[in-house]
Length: 405
Image 1 (tube, rainbow, N blue to C red):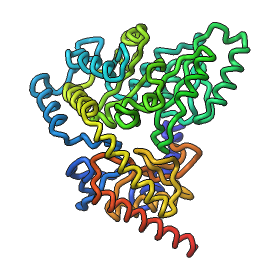
Image 2 (tube, helix red, strand yellow):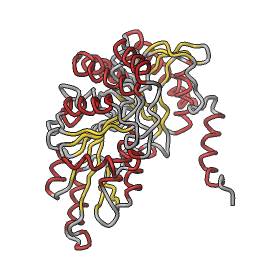
Image 3 (cartoon, one colour):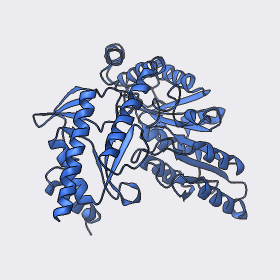
Image 4 (cartoon, rainbow, N blue to C red):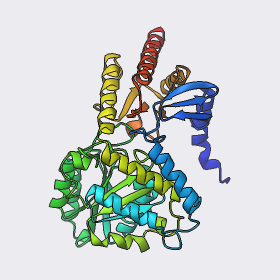
């Protein structure tokens, strides 16, 4: 048996993407012109699939901070946080994030993926704890559950009622007496852009003596009066147990973090393997995230702009008769009838000068085929005109193709 036999199913899908004319795994941004424009194969396109929600990638303060950090501290740390990789800037960013969020403690990880992987795998243990996970959670949360070795129970997406039923069954089973319970949800889900009923989940978790872990990777900086995420918008940020986030969206860098008011959070520093055995974030990444955080805290207009843009695009798509997956928000996903149509529509949009994300089964909830657009505060009216016109042409073209077929 070959090691590569197991890839045959994925190979069929990969080859189908290539045969469709373009493969999203090979699309290359030849030149980045700004937060919302790039050159792809000699053509300027509007970037509408970057998660650059607040548009800070080219902000002078952010770029200057990263440049200065490289000049003063070097290109990398060459060590883990446990070894030589904890710099004063890492600790300063942890304090700044904790203060911004209103938590007493924060740990910075090398990526957002590792933040969830490390925290969840360290918080739960086999035979001692049970993890309850929303069915639509990100892969890094699933992988954290697997790495922990703890029993994992999935509940229906955004259903506090289903979580309640599953916790109730566990409460009545002597096998689980005295075991810890951790519930994992996201604030805004990255594929469809739908939002969790965090308050209802918190109520259920508390009734059953469970801890609540909320991943705000895509909602940090965008939701809430001060940009502290869905849990702030729903008034429960002071009550949840663990808050995780990433630097690769609104904070326009690379890295991640977990914050909490539990003093025991610091135990993760010598219990989370992805923290202990990975080189720490580079000085440039830390400096960029720190500067971006300062922009978020000082400029509420950034959130106002992204929401104004999101409402405009969502309303336009609705008028075009497109099927959106969630109410207006920074992620606007349009559902298409099948994978082949999604391939063709995604490629059509690139030809029209618009780059969005192609998302297809098995990487999507409910085996949906979608075009995923992420709105930015940096998108101008001209950018959005191009996006809306391209989607309008796509809707007309593929509607005609279905009629012809």
